[in-house]
Image 1: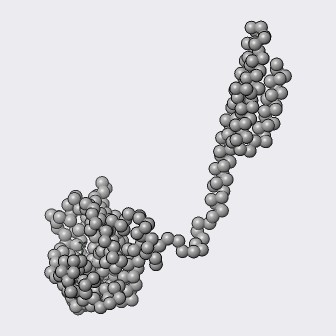
Image 2: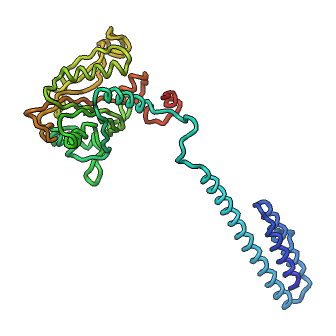
Length: 341
Ligand code: DAH
């Protein structure tokens, strides 16, 4: 019996060396450990033996069974590991840092409008600035002359973090840092993502994009503001755009305005899109409040400036006729992939 066991073991081990996949391994397992396999046949052959002999031989067969079982498990794990190694090695063959050979995907409509507007303002001498999405109470409110009781500070509107920071609710949050960085004279735009705790529907999102602009110099007046906005909008929409200012209140500008543009659908005649008024509300703006300039370290005896907060998401909706604001963040490729750069 002992020699038979040894023979089976050696045969098994040499057969195992030739195994290269799971199917072959399973076939070998059945051949040796299956119901009709060698091990079970040896067990059956013990029937004729006496008690002591049977016990001793049975133990030897059981040991063989355990050895084969362990060897099969270890081999199966090795096969899986080799498969993984092969996958990893093939992934390494791709150099992800190389430039692509074609153009894949498309730019997001907000990115397209943002780049377009940036280009126009850059051509008018503005620099494009970046500002983080996380900021604090001082930059988002205090430095903008927004008092502590202002509704914008309400927990309902602003996402506060447990460390005292907050997600910026408007791109105006960058004004102070940019004034301090460059001083006057200054022309800058700063696009960015903003967050407000809004209930979401076709016109409201909790995550949206704005582009803030400020111009500070000697003798800056509202007519400079109107000129720059009109030029930019006529470029974006590729036609002459009429603008009008209505009074609007924002603590960081004085006077403050709502800038409307002539309706793009009816050209100011009046239609359902503009509620028959001929005008669309586009961009709040105004002359920067002297307190805001002061907090930004600007000499208010010498300089004045204007600021505007362009709703980039809203502009993209108008530019591309997108009716539902939720399409922007949905990741819905049916909508988004229509916009090719
Ligand atoms: N930050 C304001 C908001 O998101 C918009 C705004 C109003 C920006 C007037 C301005 C401005 O620069 O002058 O509600």
